[in-house]
Image (cartoon, rainbow, N blue to C red; front, side, top):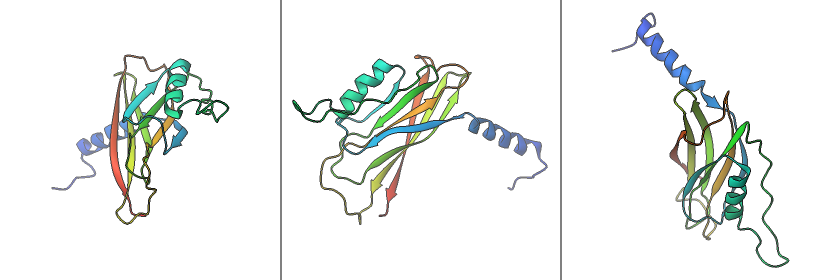
Length: 165
């Protein structure tokens, strides 16, 4: 059974799909890496400088030794207009893994935000680092007309893709 281009029902369905897409919110990656210090998989929404500072210190491990390197300072974020989403894949047995924030879709009237992420896994033919890794990504999310409330529901949706190398 095909669709009739003059059928208003088919047109309405298409309009509804486009309406959902307009809820996509601007995002910007602010930090990504392979060797995060957090080894448990986690997904977070950070809504204040204090939350970001605490998570950043845990992720980067803080000072490594007396007189040694320290973790970089977290970037300055305007939490009046943005929140930060973060995904840590957790410990992996080798290199070749990564994670990216693909899209964030907000629905202010329902008080929900959907964070879509992709985990890339190395293919069987990939030459990868033989070391424990913990890939992560942090991204800012622009708030729309009003800030996302702390009681808003946030759903992280994860997909996987193989890297054929």
